[in-house]
Image 1 (cartoon, rainbow, N blue to C red):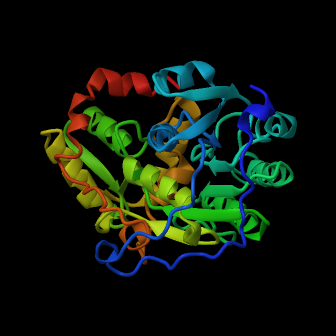
Image 2 (cartoon, rainbow, N blue to C red):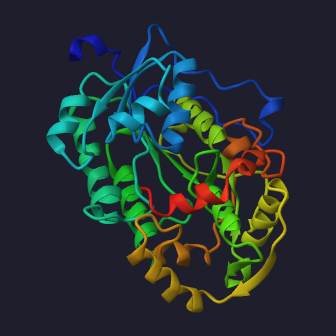
Length: 350
């Protein structure tokens, strides 16, 4: 597809911004959306991932022309089947590849990142350096809007390499000359996620007891992936989100223990929940990470299960006007379809 097919009106960053939503958005008129005169082209990185597939669906319903950047075209073809998207294959770390697909884009939605390092992929390369490259390429291509998916708790000074890599990337977004918006979600959940589904697979593999790292006291604020996708689209449509950094989460904080309890109810299962210090689990997890092709938990992720991930100032309703989906047994019924055979097979299949 040629660059000329994605011509767009330049985005005026200096245009007046409408007022931010008040505490109760339902009591006030929505801010004036960005005027639209024709379909808008958008590049979505990580388009075949959990958030990417839902975001592409939501963007399509809102009239965006989507260029989906993926690494695995076969996987993308299955997950994005039926959507009006142009699938392009590229390594996010390849500047030349990014320079070829970015011109003509009115916006970039940057979702690609890794939570688990694999051979040839490090947090620093994929989460940080690739983001810097994309920012530079997007700026030179004249991209108007840049939506960046960061992470609640991300910080350039975090002791966690994952959170540090996301924090440095976020800093670079905020320093860029683009009209950016940063979203900082708590743990994102949905039928394809690799958090709650992992908990459910571990339930199938532990028929009597279920270990809780650190006693399961760390707090999370799970947010449904469809709510995240909607927040991304609202960010694109409303000028007042430019230059904003927004923490988003579900309706209320939950401890890991409370989340596991709800997963068990949704799966019609019972387990004895036992408290296990992270220090005891770490060597077991490290060994599993060396032996299994697809370990359910890595040492880096184990440490994150012992760190609070609740949202102190939730913007999901206040700013985006979205009523967050509850994290309850009804919403988690899909977990009941996971079998022990499937759970075992997942350990050996990437």
